Amino acid sequence: MINFKKMGVLLLSSSLIVSGCATKNQNTNSTQKKEIKTITLEDFSKNINNSEYQYIDTRNDEAYNGFKVDNIKNGGHLKNSIQYSASFIGKVNKDKEDKFISDKGLDKKKKTIVYDTNKDNTSKVADKLASLGYEVYKFDDYKQFADNDANKANLVSYPEYQNLVSPQWVKDIKDGKKPETYTNNDYAIFEVSWGEGDKAKNYKEHIKGAYHFNTDWIEDGPVWNLRSAEEIKKNLLKQGITSNKTIIIYSDDASAGFRVNWALKWAGVKDVRVMNGGLKAWKEAGFETETTANTPKEATNFGVNIPAHPEYDISRAKEVAEKVKNEGLKLVSIRSWDEYTGKTSGYDYIEKAGEPKGAIFGFSGETKADVNDYYDPDGTLRNPQEIYNLWKGQGIQETDKIALYCGTGWRNAVPWFMTQLTGRANTYFYDGGWNDWQLDGTLPVDINKDKGQKPDAKNDYK
Image (cartoon, rainbow, N blue to C red):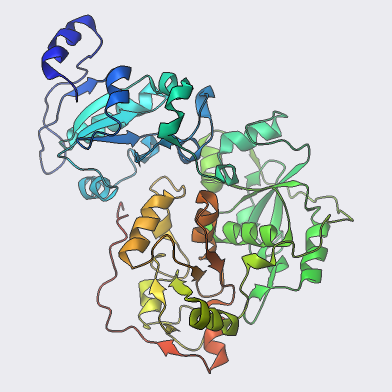
């Protein structure tokens, strides 16, 4: 613990600096703003396992997940730290800030240490937390901490952190650089959405040099499952996509991009990256866009037999039902609460409402068109651990064998990506979803009309 008697002496020597004063918070609760102090490297390090402290990482997802942003030697986040990115500041309804921050897991009874490699970020978040009544300590020497190999045991990187990249990472590749984890010499960027290039509204403005990827190239009605391996191979080669090319994906409808990510992984593309935040994040970074359509050069050899990873897909309802019966597989519904409780099928082309019998609600959004429960106020992917905590509240344990599904296989691609990013085992992707289940007619169905209110997604910031 910090010695507060000693602290008075340290204040004079500038090792521990009071950087704020007591003011009235502008929020309606008029909470007394706490003083913001600066904590030393020694005290930061020795209190990591002290239950009286909580550590807040204010960096972006890529840094938190494992990238060595700002040239730190050891990437990842401090174990048990809570992520509250500085990019959230100004994007949360002021009337909801207190609960939104508390829902991230912060406790006002604990001393709160805020860290980042960027001093402006720590200041922004520290000021916000102090205004809400948290006892805040800024730590401005995180690079020094992370550069010390002796601290590696306290840092956590997600096993596949490279799958989610920032706009800056993509810009570096475009500029001919070799950003962290990129070892290839061949890449392509695709904007993903439905429709051919001249009909795809989201491609009208795109990253300079990016191509369009039509979701119809990988799926087909009426179930909207994956097309045949031969069809997908033909369509990928036409877009110049091979197993050895690095494919960078982004999309306005995030679930579209994550679905194509899953399909490319299934097919056998070895290096697929999803750009976090989509075109909005790209433009906010000040990077160049264009309106000119680009046409890729066709390829002739995909490089591996498709699918290289058939295990990524459970295609049809009967196969899922067998696994539920014989292997204890848990079905997790990534659909809206109205779909889960049978108020709507969610789609004008899906006749029946309901869920596969025994399915567990796994959060999503308000309609079939969004997955807002999985996104942060700045439009980036939510911290996976927050989702896993929600699942735990639904009775889904980390050791459980689960199959994620939605209506037709788009929304469930988002949490599937999270499980791959973090190395969570025993996770299946049920492609057919509710559409395929209800078309069968012989499989058991639940209408969950007695479930009451939707469980709190702990993500209300609007």
